Length: 207
Image (cartoon, rainbow, N blue to C red; front, side, top):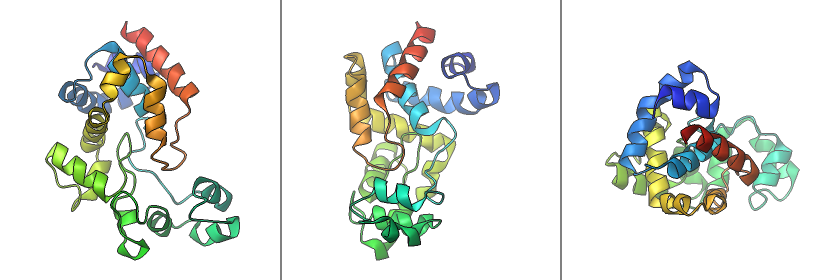
């Protein structure tokens, strides 16, 4: 993994490439993302989900109509969603309550274990698994997942944990996208068409 490869594959600035090249290189080596197909699939999904800019999802600027559309189980109507506009803390506690190991709204787990990382991890149970896999306590230090180093490594850990390398070997790009989409986080529901375009562009550069 080199700055030039990232610049050519993702059409990003040199500054952004140099910001990420060290952590991404460490990630692909540590988690056996070690072939053009694997690396192209990994980078394509990381790019669609984070643009190598966003290491945690900002819940504050979502309009009420969008909130209701994203989480209809939590908000039956647009009016139900309006009090949560502009309050990422309250919104996270509402929509991520009682799932992925989180407690109820009052526990604050929704906000504490909100989506962070280049392939955003969400929920207490996922943070616990990542803590074990990466030998770092994200449960007591959840903000660490938004730091570049851990944002990259956690993406690689999740990629390997979900057996995405094997799917990439088989060319099952759509299966990877569908698994990621099942997390139902926010507008990070990746569109397979977008992922496929980026994947082919990266693969062309790598080969």
